[in-house]
Amino acid sequence: MTEVKTSVLKTLKAMKNTETKLPINISSFERLTQNNMLYVDKTELIYNFISTTGQYFLSRPRRFGKTLLISLMRFLFMGKKEYFENLWIGKNNRWDFKKFPVILLDFNGITNETPDEFKLMLGNALVEISENYEITLKQSRLKERLKELILKLYKKYDSKIVIFIDEYDKPIIDHLGAGDDRLDIAIKNRNILKSFYGTLKENSVDNALYLLFITGVSKFSHTSIFSDLNNLTDLTMDKEYASLLGYTEEEIQF
Image 1 (tube, one colour):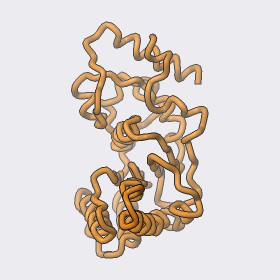
Image 2 (cartoon, rainbow, N blue to C red):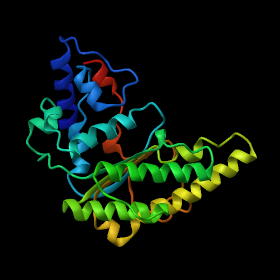
Image 3 (cartoon, helix red, strand yellow):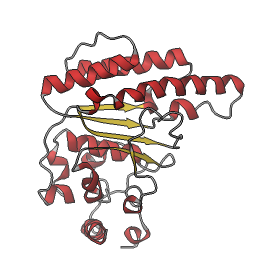
């Protein structure tokens, strides 16, 4: 952790006398980079868990930078070396910038007003990803469609797959505290997600994955939404990754 802090502070000091702007409400790493905005270098911390295959979960409140973190990692796994030339992970030649097939499911942009609409829009999101990779999906049910997408990507590119799921719990918490009807929607959406995420535990799918990274605002117990996906490594309260998002006092007062 001392080495990580030193790396972050060196990055901040190098930027101190530049016109670098502090990003406000920016969740795109590409936009942040192209507009010369300040990024506090967390890539050494990120490298610590993406350098080996694994499945991870991270919970933080909204507006804490979870989406930006996923955006950055997505570019890492897309092999976009040019975005990281001035960051720890690009300078230390520890990451080979191999290009992986990437599935990104951002529940901020998937409508969930009713369970039927939610299933339709989630299914459409999978189709859109498949079309971007020029893959045709034949399955209609969500579980089978997700599995089909993963296995076809695995076969087409002869490469392990990376999956990012951002704000996994939004289709549930959007409806909590708003009356019995909305609570019923939350329960039905939870059941949809429970079955959907359970696909990722199947042996054929698990063997095709290099990294699974899930973020959310809250952590539902393993007896509910994650009961079929109970092998996630939870980084939420891991001391080593406490500074993965946001700024520490030391970073602010450099």
